[in-house]
Amino acid sequence: MRRLYHMPLSPFCRKVRLVLAEKKIEVELAEEKPWERRMDYLRMNPAGKVPLLKIDDLVLAESSAIFEYIEETHPEPPLLPRKPAARAEARRLAAWFDDKFHHEVTANLLYERVNKKLMKAGYPESEKIKAGLRNIKYHLDYMEWLFESRGWLAGDQMTIADFAAAAHLSCLDYVADVDWTRGQGVRDWYAKIKSRPAFRSILADLVPGFTPPQHYADLDF
Picture 1 (tube, helix red, strand yellow):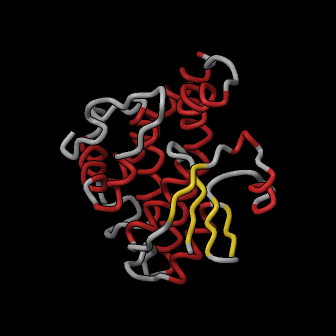
Picture 2: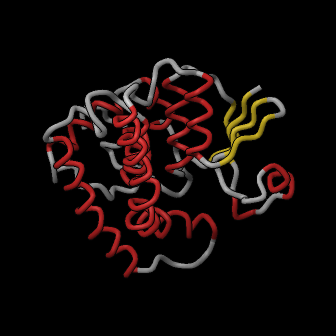
């Protein structure tokens, strides 16, 4: 039995869900609210964070560690290139989105707009939202620059870097915080990746109290 403890609008959970779906690995989804600090969940993962993948008696936490396990145990289709330098670049960009993009953009926009309301933790801080909207422009421009010489983020094949980026951007797109007119390369890439079968369950997610924009699930924008 495989069970993934997740939150619908967590980019780290979405990254793992995309990997599992791309590799056609069936998994039961169990929504977990980390702020509730459920003791049964904390016994499995003392960090109290999502995602967590439970496979029979095996418990895997942290999205990057979960991905590495899945990639090694289910190598087809590969989400890391064969050449060491290309693998390093894919890992670098995945870490870029899970670290730098997350702190500069996702935490300032998604967490302020959505997570605070879900947690009943007060009102969004306008300065953080302004910072997130300012920072995302820089990141979109960087992606556009990469696409001038690459078909996918890390090179000529789709990798974990694309799923990490798409996971963050899809969450932000749910709250209409991505300017898809800023770069044609980024827009074309996202249309291509969200058209994959692995994205179907992601685009079907609905969070009570929040309605996605009309283009959110439109494969052609």
